[in-house]
Length: 182
Image (cartoon, rainbow, N blue to C red; front, side):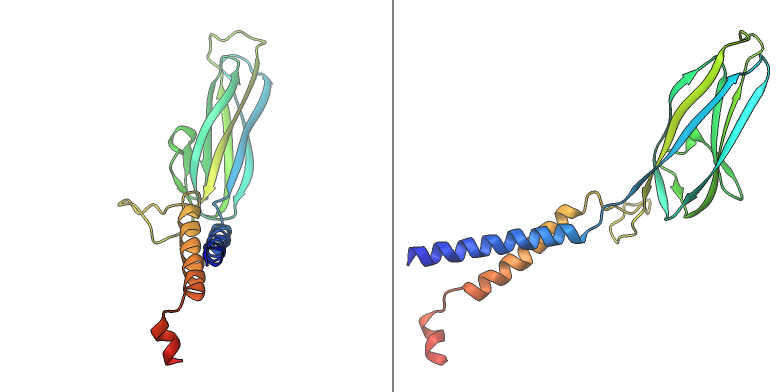
């Protein structure tokens, strides 16, 4: 009798693991897109400004997880903007911003101070990290939706409970009075 009980427990446990795996796999995590900020202007003379731009398409509504310069060389003052058709947002104000799907332009600019030494190489490298927004009913007071990165555990637990509970009901031991009524 104890061997049959152990088999039932193992079967319910296996069903729970399978349900948890299926539940977690059914939730897709938010995807990340990195927009590089790379500019190499070579030698920029004192008092001069150099600029470059790059078109970027954001395929799905996203929010900016991070926006920063990683490496800057030269004495210039660097600026980067993410521009839509109607407005530009400076790099330092992007973190946490919501970005609707669409076409954008990244504009990178450096201005050399008048007292900069002529002949210095001017380059910078950075990035803007976008995370896809997933509209879910779980929001905070500001209306920001939770992303898929935190919900697979919830889906795994729900799947494990559902499949494990169903297996437990199927495998449960019948009571003597239930056997008499059949």
